[in-house]
Image 1: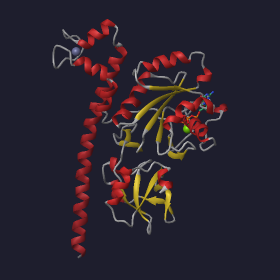
Image 2: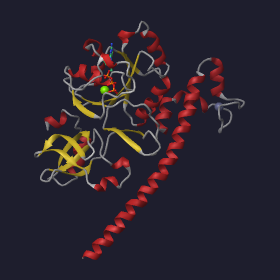
Image 3: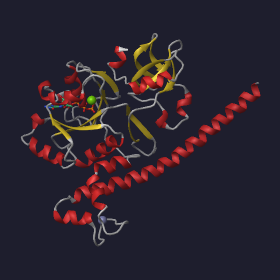
Image 4: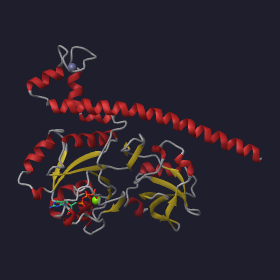
Length: 349
Ligand SMILES: Nc1nc2c(ncn2[C@@H]2O[C@H](COP(=O)(O)OP(=O)(O)OP(=O)(O)O)[C@@H](O)[C@H]2O)c(=O)[nH]1
Ligand SMILES: [Mg+2]
Ligand SMILES: [Zn+2]
């Protein structure tokens, strides 16, 4: 049990195990391979669990991902049940497939990592924030490479524009002392995810927090080789402070999918203003009595922030419609498979 607690086990999951066959044992997914899942702790002798086809005919949201808790049959080492999640980070797959891609499950805190250089981009941070807030995960903006700029205050002040109450930490990811401020989120039972572009220092943060080289990082020699991702797959790691941390490959694109509430939380100021507009269906462009436009005129709201809100809202709505169509297709497909299987069973009997 101690081992489970040390990798994020919570009463919420215990409760679910009590409903299942008592023969089954829980484990956490620490990495996902093409053919199956690496789990911890070992169940019986099994640290690798293959995933049966039935998980692939379902909505992708029902497939196991890194951070998931699963119930395993210790005799066969097979995955029996995917436990209900406390949180889920997902995005729309890059490219044209229009599929949901799961990033991580059961995360408490997300470190949104960007560096104090050209990588820094408010619009990208707003995307991450919407997704993380949608999932009820605590966001922390981590600005790395503070040792490489004379202007840390500029980056911190810019990030502050994203929200008055946001946690913002400026760090040198290579220096353990400068990461003290992050430890509060890394205590026993806590699960942390790192999100950010390639090269911002996610794996460097993992190594410095762990106090050992768990992850390969980009060598200084390759530093200008921007196109390459050093980390190629997602994996969970234990930290001496008691938490577990998820390293991910850098993400170039982070398309919103189902982030309506997250957008609402991130842009709560605009949503509150819009309640004071004269017209209920105000588009906040040129309508008379628009409280949002008034706030821009008064200098209380930045035009950039409003544009960003509109853009993300449109994107989310568009992707939600695409996803709804996809889900309907998955349901139909699962039904067809079920029907075919039961016909085959009938024939056999
Ligand atoms: N000076 C300085 N260098 C840093 C800092 N953070 C990261 N680096 C360097 O930046 C380079 C990239 O760091 P990585 O940790 O590999 O970046 P990553 O985010 O894991 O990148 P991907 O795995 O490609 O997504 C390495 O050479 C690090 O040593 C920092 O705060 N200060
Ligand atoms: Mg990395
Ligand atoms: Zn308005």
